Length: 466
Ligand SMILES: NC(=O)c1ccc[n+]([C@@H]2O[C@H](COP(=O)([O-])OP(=O)(O)OC[C@H]3O[C@@H](n4cnc5c(N)ncnc54)[C@H](O)[C@@H]3O)[C@@H](O)[C@H]2O)c1
Image 1 (spheres, rainbow, N blue to C red):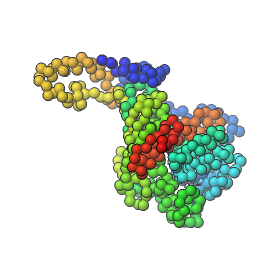
Image 2: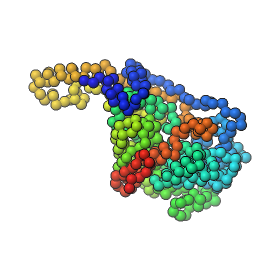
Image 3: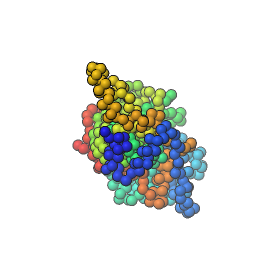
């Protein structure tokens, strides 16, 4: 019978040639249940000269725009010089936080026309992502665009082509791509400690006191303080509606539903850890079960994906879900289940545990052999002991846990990666191709859900298979 260690070598000998397998795998096995704090590779990794400034502007200063700015301005030499939003109150706020002399506008073209701006952060509603990204790169700006990279499946190709044509740095803003927990999870996965990947389970469960995606609407919102016409963009023309403006995620005209908004992070994490290009097939289901507030996207969604063999993983199945009703075990997670153990990736932790086998044969000690005669049972037990002698001592039930240090921000690391790409030409963690390989699988879940059918996908080229 193959021992655990031999099995690990056998399973990963070819797929992960040259990985640090023996050292890491044995470290886990001899250190059951230990907790480790990860080291944060924050700036300053490099001392930029005082002249090496990057002037940035924010386009879209809502919830995420402000968070992006908080991270961006922490990177040495990065200076916010302008901001654009469609609601006056948010432009007032950006001045309150970043200085009353900051240039602000409701027209992003005025930002793109300025020669002194090197890079823009695009944190608008999803339906503007591709258009502003393309215009910005064509006008010579580097782009940090919030996830999902695009609103519709057919928009990805033009963003990728524009990035290639202009040579501008383009990063999609899904933080798990640069997080130290994903890096550690990848190292653990590539060590082979969990054996051969069998399936992945991922989820994001949430609820909030004022309701999921029922964000606050300011009392001064009106057709004067909000540029509704501009907001609509390529969406159907309808009269001003503050609910649609401030809670755009709930409507397919402006957002991408649970899949585009939240599946996309889970794909980013998974693809980072597994070096995967994506799935080849999905079936998604769900429904609008709880939030009967006029939204036209589901509040429960579950999808089953098939992944083909990748450079660093075998074919496997993925189940992904988002639920907006039960937030009791709030949070998002990715669980990689291997033949030998499990890696649980959270926002701040990576936990590794090896399968705990029952002492006796069968599932939980139950097996058909218990129905045999006493003599047969004895014979079978002797055979079992002879064939599975090594499994018991190697069991780790508590798990080994790695966690981020206090105050760690994956968001900051993701921005650091972006500016290192601009200044040093460092590889971008979530470039346009990666961005589409995360957004595409999320958007095909929507297509499957609305059309009630299986959707096929080409993970190499990030395109729909008709
Ligand atoms: N990476 C993450 O963890 C994360 C978290 C939240 C949101 N996001 C993404 O960030 C984006 C923004 O989400 P949010 O929660 O900040 O939304 P939000 O509604 O709080 O803010 C969006 C802002 O964009 C502005 N806007 C829309 N169209 C514009 C245009 N054409 N020009 C200028 N401004 C425009 C609106 O006025 C609004 O203030 C979304 O794509 C979302 O998916 C990412």
